[in-house]
Every structure is written in structure tokens, then in C-alpha cells.
Image 1: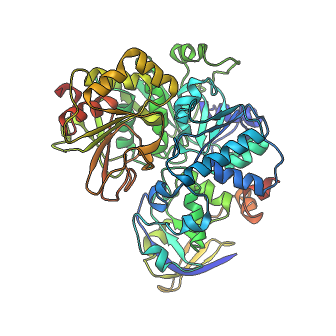
Image 2: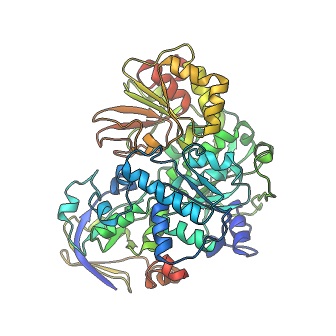
Image 3: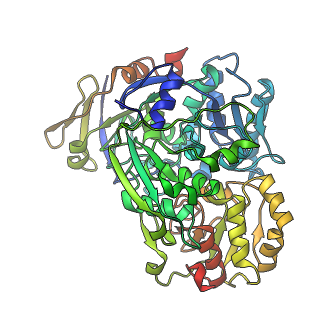
Length: 159
Length: 419
């Protein structure tokens, strides 16, 4: 599995309220949720994002509410992977459970800049910054989690 | 190697003699919870996966509390979807307008959670039930769907941080100040992926409402769960609520804690978290002059009877400042009724507050108290992120019911000692 795209970069403690504000949680429609993704910190995001793009955050990405609407909105907007130094734990498991790729990598989070072109090889965990000609090594997932991802999410893995 | 309280509960629910931090396990669940925001997503996934039933209709709770009484047509449709699902599978614990309350105040009140149990909820503040000595944690809707179908969830066994409490709380200081103090000290990711375990002789100065408030905000430090040692106060609380046997787990003497914090409760002052993170704390003597336009007293963090009592005692005989809207939300119908009986509602209305039926409403910027651009609110809620209660240029200051009530009177962030 591979990903390749332009980076949308944000800071530390990106919370689920800015990823998808609660005022839009009166729907479970994925496309409608995606149309409001990131709107409280970046009103341009939904206009700029293209299929396959990559989101980069700092520490504690996805903190706050347990709303699965947050990784759903990010995934549905076209983002192929989120890279951060750390993820808040509920966001981490939600992303895995719904099949949104995420990687923890401090170096990548520090060195990748907004707009960089980045390629990811999920089998090796190697993140290549095409724009800067650099590579970074992300932490690999435990086998248990790889299995959930390989089967296409939690519900497929337990059925 | 010994185990922490959390590790013991997880081991018991995974059918194992012992577990170690980092181990991935599948645990049996005693309760699976969802609300009107998260359940629809779970129901969609549940139906898409083709499950034919829930694992145990007495162990699934759905509480219509976030956008209720329905704030708009879409919210009404979401509740309708939950109601239809609950009736189809004959759920014992479906709580709708009329008998519902804010979920994390309601479940302990109804005796649906107890010491030693393993609970997941599709709501981040599910960690509240650790106050009763349970392992309880927030998950997403897909986990909820899987939990409803199979009665199980996967967990990575967490490392733990010990909070050794000593001393006793001063007047006008409550559980809210304790947890804000802790989050200010360790940061919003200070307990990331870890359990926060509270113990020590200081426990005896903390009421169940204090403990529920502290455990409730463990997530605001990134914690997987917060859990309290069970003592006589816990047992007394569960006595007339929990009608099934429960198990008390204590940490082993050689349990591994990656960090230990000694907290002298008597040294904690009223504490306020400034925008836009719960870790941006100041003690009340450091806040300076911060005029406000709204006060909210309620939520799963501070909408319990003792919170209402504190607010009523401070507001009694005073008027809300002319520039302030004060919104008071008892967390459950039972608490609401107690407030009527005790005369608190009369005090609130006489002072110029409005009193709402139970709802999460303003806490997450849903309804019942949304802020305009540039407005500031002192709230007893749990998050003060950008745009949390309304406009992206509004501000939420997190505080105790005592500070919120005092601030409603003065029109600026104030100590209860000032009024």
C-alpha cells in the first residue's frame, strides 16, 4: 500500500472540534461532514484538498471528543494519510477502525512543510519527501493492527 | 510483576491471569454506551456489517442527550434512528427526552456502572465511571458497533500514572479545581495512552461528585482512563444503586507506575483554564480582569446535585450581572427534581438565571447558549477549544461551579470569596 500527495500542515493539539465542529454533527453523511472538514482553523482546506493529499500534524493530533465523524471527514475529503508526532488515543483507534491510514513520525512532522509533495510506503513505514529529497522512518504498526487495516477496518475483521 | 487497578480489570475481562503494559487484548464488556451523535454512525456500521442482534440487551445504553430536546430537523432524525434501533432490539437502557439525563451523570445514578466493570462508550467522557473503580474509556462509533454486536473490544494494556492524594480540600475548592490543577501540571497529552490512577489518604476528602468530575476530565490530559481506589464512600454510593455483585480491585504493592505525582489537596486553589486548551490554567488570584458575557453551569463534568447546591448557595440573594446570561443545566431529571425540592431552582430564577432541562447543548456548541464573536463564557464544562461553544473568536474559561456562580454575579472571572 502506498500514498502520494501534497501536504496540508497543521500544529500541535489539533482537536476534533476544529476537524469537524459539533454544530455539524447532526448528520452522519460522510460527504456533508467532509464539506466542513477543518473549517474552524482553515476555511480554505476543503477548496485546496485533492484526492490522495496528506495531512501532517504535531503532538496529540485528534485530541478531544470521540467523534468518529473527525477521521471520517478527513478520509472523505480525500486525505490518504495523516502523519503526526503522536495521536490522541481515541482518534488513533477510530482511524484504524475506519481504515484511515495514520503514521507516527516525529522527524517527518518537524521537517515536512505545508505544500511539500510526500510519498509513503506503508509496508516499510518509509516517508519520502519528494520536494526536499529527504526520507523519514515511521513507527510500524503492531501485527494485530495491521490485520485490522488489511481486512478493511474493524467490522470486517471481526465478522 | 504486579498489576495496576486498570491492568487487573483488563486481565479479568480478557480471561487472563495477568497482563503487562503494551499487551494487546480482547476484553469482555459489561456496558456499551452511545449518544444521539455517535450512535447513528454506529447503527449505520452495525447494519452495514449485517449483524442480526446485540450481544446483551441489558448491556447496551443509548442516551439522547447531545442535541436534545431536538435542536433541529436533522437532530430529530438522528434521535429517531436511535429510537427505532432501540425498539427493534428491545434495549433495556434507552433514555429519551423525559427520562434521560446527560449520559455520564445518568449511568452512575441508575446503577448501570459499578466497581470492577469494563465499559466502553462512544463518547470521550466515558472515562467518568472510573470514579467508581471501573475501567471505563471512550471509543468511537465503529468500536461501539462492534461492542454492541460481540460484547468485546480490543485494547492495548496501558502504562499507568499514580496520583497519590494527601490533605483535604479547602472551602470553595472542588474536584474541578483538582483536575484542572493536574491538567495544568501535566498538559493535555501528559497522560497520553496511559491510565491515571488516584489513591491515597486524601481520597476521604473527595465526595463521589468530586471523583466523578476528576475522572471525567482524565481524557483532557490524554488519559485512556482515570480510576479511583474504591473506599467506603464509593461503596456507600453504590449501595442503593447497584443491584448486582461488583468486584473491588486494588493495585499490587509492586504494580508498575511510570510516574507518581504527590498532590496535597489542601494546597489547591480555585483554578481556571484559559482559552484554548484545558492546560492553560491559572489560579484564581492570577486571573486578572476578565469581563464575561455568559456563564454555563452544568455538563457531564459539573451538572450534579452538589454542583447545583454550590451554585445556589453562592447565587442566593444576589442578581446575575446585567451583562451576563447565566444558564444552569441540572444533568439529569432526578437532579432537576432535587433542585426543585431543595429550592435551588427558585434561587436560580430569582437571581436571573435560566434553568434548562438536561442537555449537553452549549458544552459542545450544539445549542442552548452559543457564543457570538468576541464573547467570553465561564463554563463548568470540560473543553475550551477554538469554536467549542460557538464563534471561532469566542472564548471559554473552564472553572468550578463556585467560580462560575461568583462570576455570574460580578460579570468577570471571580473568586467565590468576592461575593
